[in-house]
Image 1 (tube, rainbow, N blue to C red):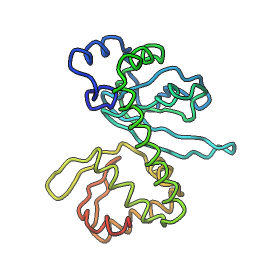
Image 2: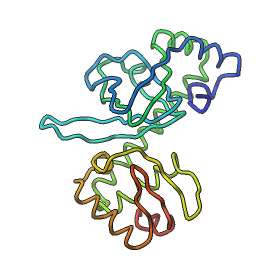
Image 3: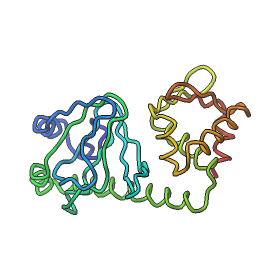
Image 4: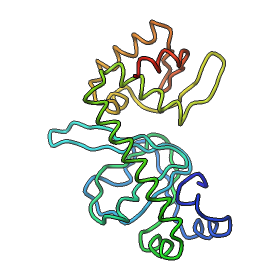
Length: 220
């Protein structure tokens, strides 16, 4: 929790006081926290597990915008621009969240401008990631997007093991395809090609990255 930008600008005493005023939410895989279009009045910080943020088109197609894990927060947009939720938040694995209502957060910000700066920095980082994602959809082929997505997941969720980096992403093949904006068949073909080349080894909702350097070259 302390890794979240919301707490980075607070001392221990203020951080403990803030935690005491937050509500705890526990979810199982596939539970939906809120849907796109729902009223937004709470910011959430992930303590354990992973959350996927996505949108659904009118014809039912789904696109994942982000996969978030421990220490990351979401829902802060409603603080600066009150309105309906712009995405659906769904648990990818067992999740524990801490929620802070906007009225309590507004009171915190009025007395601590450094927290506002930290939140705006987090929003800017999220916007930068979104811009990169849009550019990848236009300029990068599917194998390149798959490689880049795996490297991003490895940076945030990977752990060194014998033979490489184990990335327990908890995503199904369909969810991974939604994350890179391609069909499951095309993504599976790219993963199979990477495995044949010895760059990675596929596991159940996980992947062992064995040649990060080659994947980095393919992601460019």
